[in-house]
Length: 124
Image (cartoon, rainbow, N blue to C red; front, side, top):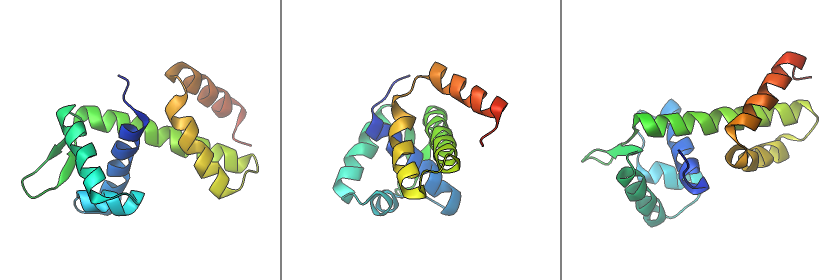
């Protein structure tokens, strides 16, 4: 299942916001990402059409199973790469920015191999 990087970012943001907010709305996503609400609305329409989210009449956004799967995959990669780079001595800001880039473009096979290697040899 391949979707665009921006869609992955939106799904990941919904997942993250859902951990701290009782409900997620377009305005919450816009505030978190620094985007215009109109841009977020278009993205939410596309994600809903693709079956990755549902939106209630009140405007509450929920991940569907496919949206949850994509968001969890991206979030796991982000957390892994951020932590790994920080432990390698990269400053937190740079590590987070680089993790955002790495999380989208690496194949599942390469990610699994790196994760396995790091887990076998430790993060240090």
